[in-house]
Amino acid sequence: MSLTRRDLLLNLGSGFGSLALAHLLGRNDLRAEPAAAGDLNGGLHHRARVKRVVQLFMNGGASPMDTFDYKPRLSELAGQKFDPGGDTKVESVTGSPGFKVLKSPFEFKQYGQSGRWVSSVFPHMARCVDDLAFLMSMSSKTNVHGPASYMQNTGFVLPGFPCMGAWIGYGLGNLTDNLPTFVVMPDAKGLPYNNQGNFSAAFLPVKHQGTIIRPHLADPIADLFPPKSASFITPDSERDGQTLLAAANRAHEARWSGDSRLEARIASYELAARMQLSAPEALDVSRETAQTQSMYGLDAAPTAGFGRNCLIARRMLERGVRFVQVWSGAAGPSGNWDNHANINTELPPIALATDQPCAALVQDLKARGMFEDTLIVWTTEFGRMPFSQGAAGRDHNAGTFVSWLAGAGIKGGVAHGQSDEWAWKSLQPTWCYDLHATILHLMGIDHTKLTYRFNGANRRLTDVHGEVIKEILA
Image (cartoon, rainbow, N blue to C red; front, side, top):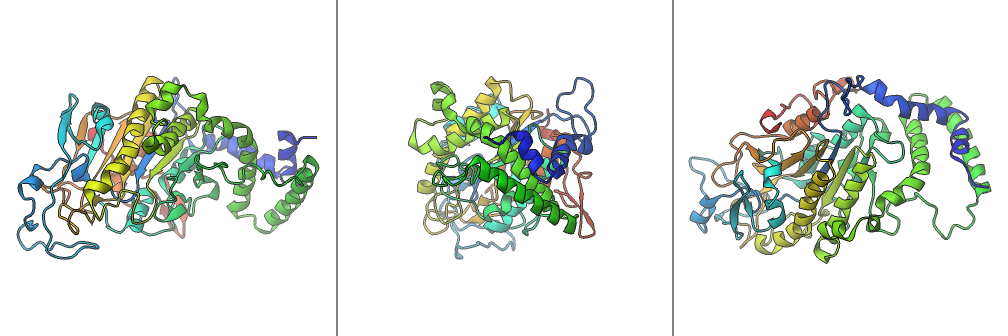
């Protein structure tokens, strides 16, 4: 006899599971103001332009002067000692003194009606520039991978703070009961710097942390189904296990009534039961047409991995996942955007793997009418230096890098801020706080009001900083 959903909820705590479910179903009303008449997107503090977000994170530090930030001055000064003038001290993270200006080995051209400059490593994204709003002067407080990745994801350079996906789930709740609110798809090669710290809920209730999905594995979601070798798991054993678990839940709740982890655990079990039916369908890209699969690059080895993840991201968004994060590049010295040795040989492969899928995601969302309420964010943790490391590599640079946004509420074909003539420093720095404030604003959230009391302080994603970047808003 199979275990029904009703039996499952009843067994999970003799009513406590039902209490958790009631919380899940009602938390939008607890967090958000009622939506205005005719407003399908709702919002927490004002009308939302965006219902869901997909963030494409280029792990390792994508080089701006070799991708989107055209700097002809580097060609003019190529091979000369890098000298910004005055008494400015030039430092490098892992390199040595005597820095020589390194020009980009890639050809730049202008594209679209906006005339945006894009290098030859991104031929597909180049055709989308009129849909993109570029942040040309992003800056970081650190040029070390771990702290910089924390900063771009959580707003802090130290661990222990919730990431943006967790904050959005906490503030707005879920759009569906059958899939997670916040999904993370790491690179098939492995987790990024900080491992799971980039997707953590930290001091927010545990249920808001990212659910990791690895579509390249035989079991994309760990432990969603029992292993095939576990023949001893039967409907009867499932019921007995649930009964025992219910008793343990009651005892734990009586002793630790203020601990949110039990509620999160129960909610996780309930969600897992529903996902056993919904997740396999959402992850099945064979349901897509051959044309769609080809558009994302699933028929070519270089693009198949990242392309599959981008296609699944679109399927997740369609089915009610509110925030999806797709990573390019794992932690480590190679196979990512951390191009220390040779920019000419290291950047093209990682750019090739992502270029077509990123452009396909933009085009696909537009074709399906999802561009009107979905936000795409492309970013990285920092940039690269305008001078060489070794013969042809580039070292870390917190001074300036590029991000772009597209979709709901975004004015395409525009740029905000600029870097200096070498792409060494930002002239008008844009911080992660400003990017986060803008994303929250588009989702109907005032970033100064979304807070959580922790250790005697009202914490927020943007700390005490952040301004909405109004110039890129439609």
